[in-house]
Image 1 (tube, rainbow, N blue to C red):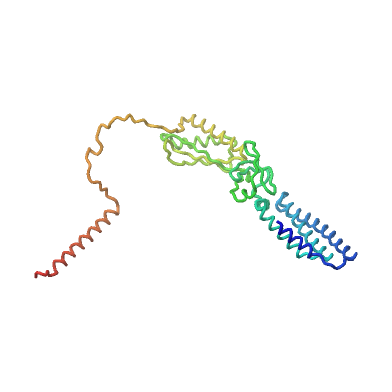
Image 2: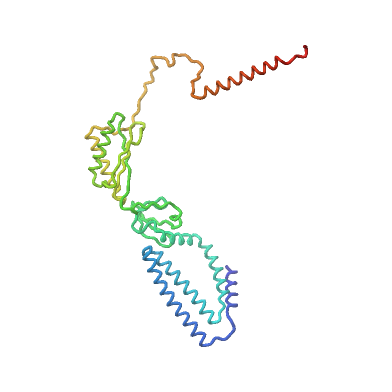
Length: 327
């Protein structure tokens, strides 16, 4: 820090010229500065209205307009200082060094700031949306230059750094007006599956929160340990309270429909073994070599056996044809 202050002091001493200033120079510098301020304010307002029409009112529109205003003011101020005979180059070099030091010291703040610009430009969510950010589910209440504030479903207020939000998966539950959910239902193995399917469709018709369009679907999911599973797909309003209320109504309606049709909702069952010996001995009480025929494997082994036998016979014939030393 001491070195930076020394560089800045040296830049100030080198920046001033020794030529005398006239009244005309001061007037020119004043006119340039006033015109710069007016131009910066005008361009900032124009850019803010343009950005607001494009991506909506918010932090991004305010920030971009301010950036443009500051940039125009810095350029005009530099020109006004030049009119007064001040060398701007050394000053800008010292300010650049100071900016680098600040950027390194405030790296986390700068990361959140840049991430807020990205979020405002892309707008994956807005205030009032129900989202899942960085593993937290809630309603967006505010988006500023550093954090995004959400209200959890349990009433807690959570602030998440924008850098974490930009790097994580963003799930917006209310971006669309409707959303699909699924419900797993299991029935006993002796159930008439067609009758169970009709009962589930009848339950869907009796749940008014289930939307008729897009149409719900009832699919057989597979064979479980103790049941045959159904996967019920249905559409509802996208907000979380509607999702919970629709699931509650549908579970109640399916249970009533199954009870009216005498359909059993399967549950895990356990068979207790008494431990008594079997009346008959398994496998007749005999053991022997185990060699089960396997398609393709026996053919390959038989082929290898024939080749080995031919090699042995060929070797024996060659050994018999060769004369011995006694002969």
